[in-house]
Image (cartoon, rainbow, N blue to C red):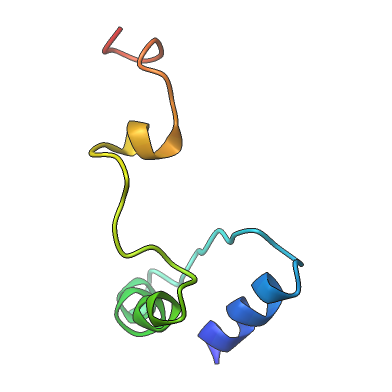
Length: 69
């Protein structure tokens, strides 16, 4: 149901992404990662690989910021 909801909004151009904040006091994070993410990946709505090797590269953040400049 969660994957269907996210897909419906995405396909309706109601959003171009989501910030997910699962209930961390229960198994919300684990359930989301193990149950919802694979469904979204099968549907081509969530990446299966990253293009860059670091988070900075994937977010497009320049190395001029932070400690590595």
